[in-house]
Length: 107
Image (cartoon, rainbow, N blue to C red; front, side, top):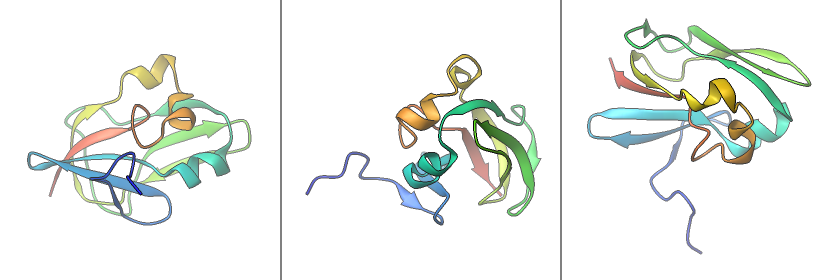
């Protein structure tokens, strides 16, 4: 069986990460996206923000729930998925691809 995103590592049941040139691209797992149902808004930290593993660093809102995003790793934000501002449903339709959340430099 060939995996759709073969380089993904799963941090836990909620988070995936993919190593990219000394950085990590982060997103939520397909299972987590399905539990949220239809995502209506994602609030992410600004580029340059720092956080530690276990810190709340953003918010994800769906038709079912508003939930804090809890950092799976410590690091500095290098990029955020700007497409999610206008298309938060990407988290549902392609959570392990186009619905990624952040790129961070691990601390």
